[in-house]
Length: 166
Image (cartoon, rainbow, N blue to C red; front, side, top):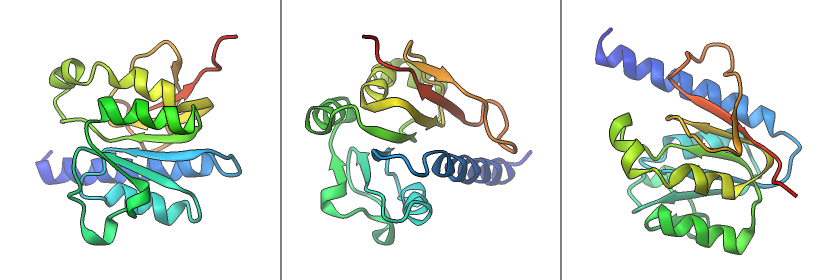
């Protein structure tokens, strides 16, 4: 398979899982979080399929296409290892949907450099929140769920946050 075909399949899977996730949280309250704004394509798609929802985007720096840039009050810039805990302090464990797109695409490197990420994701998510990610997230409070039809195993990952103990 060519790199172009692989890229197209990745984007198709990404659109399919985001559409599925948006439908899964229909009628639920809570924040929607985009961890890794990048050029803003998935943020823009989330905006389109979740009209009226507050979608907070996180990234180290703002480099999205101007048409896909969140408003200043919805954009959180800086090192996510620090900005995510600060967000939890302000908003609590209230996210209904978290899209994690903050990886480098090199799983071996991500396991080392992003080892803190699963714990931060679990801290952001309300009970039964849906988390979709381009990489595996291992944490005792995140339970893997079946992917929607048309999303190949290993291309994307989906989790529900288990209820907090107590």
